[in-house]
Length: 338
Image 1 (cartoon, rainbow, N blue to C red):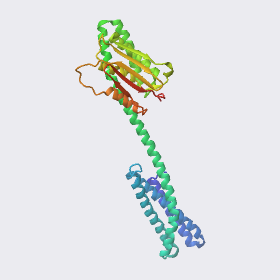
Image 2 (spheres, rainbow, N blue to C red):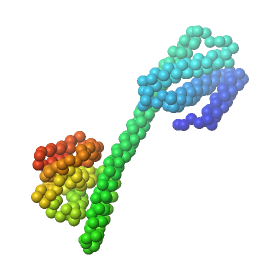
Image 3 (cartoon, rainbow, N blue to C red):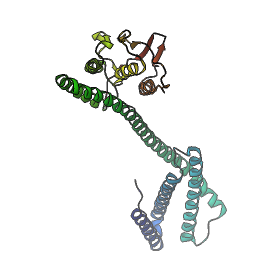
Image 4 (cartoon, one colour):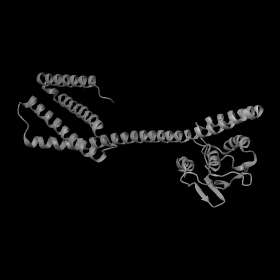
């Protein structure tokens, strides 16, 4: 329940009214002592509840459970105990003056504090436990929500790195085709539009079924064949029984792009890429004829793939390199996109 200024003012007025009615009742009808005592208990309980709720709001603002767990517990407990003792002793002293015009004795105060502690400590412990559990659950939910948003943001950021390079390469191809062969350029443009449509759709998915990735690669390979003809040869031998497994979108496209980027492609040494899979992994192998006198690269493409996989599995992306071959082994995932 939320405590507002109106609630506090209303509660104070109610307490004053209860105290006034009880005082007049005991003055003019001494047999009503039991009702007066009951009214006093109600007043004390309301004061304890309102005060501790206000303390909770104060500590929530300056010492949250999530950031200051231990400090919050002891500080809140200390302040709650002190406040409660003040309320119990103050209200009992006022009650004693109203009934007898004499202050309470030391023995009476000790007894009152003992009874107050017996009632207060279990109640305060239950209140603390319930409030801590509620705050902890709320913090867990908020933390999970923030974590999911961060993961989504990272994935979107990683995906966005694909578009400029992909778009630039294919627009260059289209530009050269327009000058040479208008019919082929139109066919290429249609295929390019289809590929780019699939690429845009993949931006909304964290993982996609393997068969969708292979469909994308088939269209993408058409674009590569237009540019390189027989200089690039892609073969795929993956049984249909594995097509339901998943992987992050555009993973194979990035590996093909990476192979083109780092391989010197000639008629004598065409780039050959083979994609195979078993029940747990997909293996992409390409012939390697490294370009000479090139500026060292950061390996951002492979790092991008590793980071994307890290959100879904602890299985590693394995890279193996020899003088003539470059092989990347990727885990296949057992779930589909949400």
